[in-house]
Amino acid sequence: MLGCLLRGGCGPVVCLWTLLLPLVSLHRLNQHGLRDHSVPDRPKLLLVSFDGFRWDYVDRVPTPNFHSLMNEGVTVEQVENAYITKTFPDHYSLVTGLYAETHGIVANEMYDPTLNRSFSMETDSIYDSRWWEEAVPLWVTIQKAGGRSGAAMWPGSDVKIHGLYPTQYLPYNASVSFETRVERIIEWLSAPKEEAVDFGVLYWEEPDKSGHSLGPQSPRMDAVIVDIDEKLGFLINELKKARLYETVNLIVTSDHGMTQLFSDKIIELDEYVSRDLYTWVDKSPVVGILPKEGKLEEVYSKLVDANPNMVAYKKKDIPEHFHYRHNIRIMPIILEAKEGWTIVQNRTAPFMLGNHGYDNTLRSMQPVFVARGPAFRRDYVKISMRSVDIYPLMCHILAIHPLPNNGSLLNVKDLLSQQPTPSTPSIPPRVKEYSYAPVMGSFFGVLMVVGFLVVYIRQVTLKQLPSLKHRSREMSQPLLQEDLHL
Image (cartoon, rainbow, N blue to C red):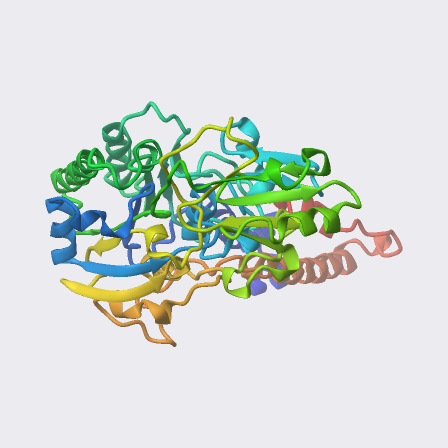
């Protein structure tokens, strides 16, 4: 090509386009997340959450499908999830590997003083992207790395985060059956190669809903647990029918557990502090208190020793091991009830027989974890792990670089059938996450082409059009930038 330019053997526009085309194509492929066929196919992974499925439910009643996965894969007996142990914070921790103070979804009900807006899982405020963009969920990361994702009702998956939805997703609708959700996930996983998703997330509201209304100690919860096991069996059978069971890595877990509540274990804030002094932000058992301006010390002094079954923390004094201090959405005062106790403003508030949200070190708050597939060992039991470790584990299985996170692959590498090495991933990632290489490559390529073009024009002009030597040349670089949309 350089010789062609110097000899004048081809037009400058043709030469320029020939040089730029590979650079432009590479940049656009990476930008839009299309597949790179220069590396092996990415392994498939499906993450399933049964909301509120406590770790010990699998042994409470016969659960043959859970035990089938346990025998064919791995089980973790104690999973310490993120504080606070609520649905939205813990589900976002699973797909970001971050504690709530870092990913920003600090509760199911929040107030952001910078945005001057409130967030509630019961309103359309959840679709405001600004609440979610302090972190990057795994479905966004894998798409930026050239892969594809599918989401069936996972919290936050129907929100446009950092400009992207999952490749395929279902808008949240609690009335959509579990079977329909599974069918969609199977369709996405088994689609033709260029359309199939690599990473899927699947969410189901039970047994959380029944745990709240019945209480985990109720004998009626047995039937709910049996039903969950049957739903897991349906998923397994559908994977087998689609010939995916031996190739898809399946992780079944939850966001939190559940504990029993009692009607004689209620703390009424109206007995201790006037509502005129504060705003109630989040619900029991971890209540966010926003004092009115100038009333922080007064409110705190009224609550700090108000009840022996409730702890009051100023934000700066929240224990470090909770990883729940460093976010503007965490209120200046939080109240934490002891296990089994409920905090209300007065007894007119609805009462539930079961709840979660308590200290994440409590066994009742901890979720189930079983996994099976080609990436995992067989019939292996691990004593303990943290839920934030699941994110780097999934990134390793999917062969993508994890973003900075609070987890550690080293903590869970024993779950894998092949141990990862520090220097070489098991399968090379297609595109380095958030790499500037395509942009820089295009930039330097443009500079080289412009240089060649200037030499060419100078030579042709001097030899063939001497009368034009004193004319101003047109600048070519702005035209190139416009054409390339740089």
